[in-house]
Structure formats: structure tokens, C-alpha cells
Image (cartoon, rainbow, N blue to C red; front, side):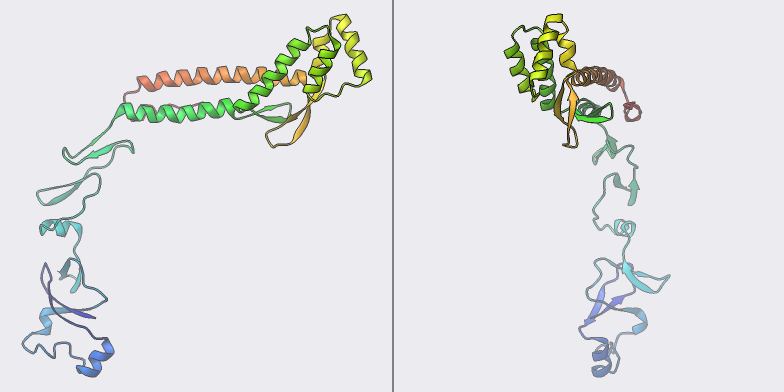
Length: 269
């Protein structure tokens, strides 16, 4: 398809020829102006392409037809789609840089607005996610990595309560049942030891030395002493308190911040 454009700022199409180059050569003696002898080819630009330019202009510096730039469209009074941060003044395209990704463009005032309360909420959510990861992420103890989700905490509490109750009982059968619940096999030898430590008042310390099966973060199962399980839970609680105190301090910093720069300088360290 051939488009014959006028050499003008707003280049219009003078006429078209719906033929291929070979067809023009064979049927028109290679003369696109064959049917328009009154036109001077020097006053026009021939463009071969599948479709016409949307807003064509003649570029005298290159003697070609091209699409108008956005600025040229504005100068010619042709409506363009403005991006965020752009407006037109005296037929000039003005671009205002966005201060931060949290600013939104006001197309009426031609300024970047910011909702600091909304931005602060975003930062609070960001640090809440870090807090939850600190609270319920993995926890390493003696080379083993424990998972500390909310449902895992129930298991830690179960062991602690079982230890507390079992260490105070004087009924060997109740004690044996409690140990079986913890998947600890009570052999005759273990039963005899339990009776002896119950008499000596050292039952709780002895129970802490017993191993139970515990599922780790990688889903492997390891033998962990009841005492170590209690230690893991204690250290995790202390970690939780530290993390919550840190989040509280960050929350206060967020509330005090007056600019996005101040908010971005807040780090969890």
C-alpha cells in the first residue's frame, strides 16, 4: 500500500495506491502519479506501509513523513493522553517529577499529593509482617531448627503443663499415662527409676532428661529431651517479648515521622 503525503506540518494524504511495488512497476510503469499528471511529485512524499500514520507530519530535516511527537501534537491542538505528573501550559508539555512512590498526582492542582496517614499505615503493615515472621518463623536451638507457628506453641505448652503436673503427682499410673501421651515408652526399668525419684523428690529434674519425638521445621523427627523443649519455649518467649518491644518502638517512630524520607529511614535492626 502506498500513501502519498503532502509536505506540510499536518501532512494529509493526497491519494493512495493499493498496489504492491511490483504491481506499480508492471501496471503503472513505475509511476505512482500516473493518474494525477497535474501533481508535482516533488511536492509530495511517498510512503509504503501497511497503514497510514495516525498523526503524520513532514520532517524537512530528513525529507520524510513521521508521526508527530507529543509536543508537536500539543502545539497543533491535538489532544493527547497525559501521564501522571504531566500537564499542558501555554501549549507546552510540563512534567513534574514524582517525589516518592507514595505520592499521587492531582490533575487539577498539577501537584503531587500525599496522604501521610495512609503511608504510615503501609509502613505499619510492613513492620507487622516482619514482627509476625520474628514471632512465628523458625527458631534454632542446639543445631536443630524448630518451627514456631501458633499451632506449634500448643505443643510446647502441652509439654510444659505435662511436666508441671507430672512432677507433682504421687500416682505412678497417672505419671505413666502422661508419659505415654508424650510418646515415651515406660519400660519396667524406667518405671522403677520413676518410683525412686518420686521418693527422693527429684521427679521433675528426672522427667526433663527423658526424650520425646519432636517434628522439626524440615519435617524430620528428632529425639528431644523434655527439658530442652522447655528451654526452646522459654527462649522463644523471650524472643517474642524482644520483637514486640522492637515493634512498639518502631510504631512510635512511625507516628512521629513527618515525611516519607523519615519513614524510609526507619529500619528493623
